[in-house]
Amino acid sequence: MPPRITPLTDPGSSPSNRRLAWLASDAEGVPVGSAFLRLPGGTGRDHRAELEIAVHPAERRTGVGGALLDAALTAARGDGRRSLVARVTAGTPGEPFLTARGFRPVLALTFARLPLPELDLEAVAAIAERPHPGYALTSWDGVVPTELAHTFADSRRAMDDMPMEDSDHGIDVWDVKRVVAVAEAVLERGDALHTVAVVDRSDGSVAGFSELVVPGGGRGDAQHYGTGVLPGHRGHGLGLWMKAESIRAARLRYPELAGLLTDTADSNAPMIGINDALGYQPTHRELEYRLDL
Image 1 (cartoon, rainbow, N blue to C red):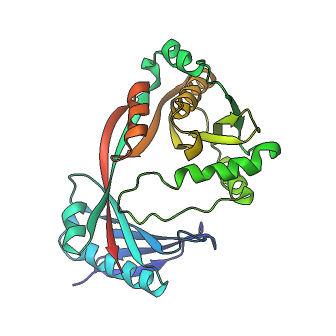
Image 2 (image 1 turned 180 degrees about the horizontal axis):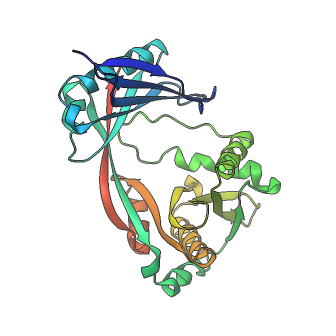
């Protein structure tokens, strides 16, 4: 008997970032799988949908995953999306499942972790204290200060040409309202957001940034949200400089923090070099698959 697919309501949805959900259950009503479809809003990313499917191991190859995928495909097409993407851990059953349904691999990501108890703090501090003529470091907690808000929002363009292979990621459009909303969302869920930025001394504008989200309580692993330098300021070691300062600050402010997590496209050689220089250790790889609708 085919699984029963029940649409669910996601209370966290908003006009700018909707998420649809489905629950698969067997003939007795026992849950056997689920699917979530994220529908990004806003200019630049409203062409794609992002899929997550989970099926109980005992129920795989019984049609559960296919039924959930069909529901998500129908919804994505109905919303006018042009592509559907899904990420799986390399070497897991998700790879052949997606391939069999016509998806193709478009992006490889390496996830890495910096174990803070093993950190050579003096070496990282030496990098953070290295002078960079024409530039200065600044930092803030939570929402960006008003005097930096506009150029910080502009600096988000540093991520526009980030190597994303053929993932059809699109372009994020940022303004002051959005950077403030993102920071407030992090704070509202009880986490801490710390930003290190590099400022061009000639005009006081933000030339690059590095964001770190620390879990409430300051324990466990923190997550890098992004590090980027505007094209006109690259080649001066600013990415390494900012990330080293972010690491140093995290270690000193949160002595019980266990590690820092990051993920980088395999084609992003400059950021991989920065992570390697700072001691990040690869943990696993994920592959993004894409289906054109």
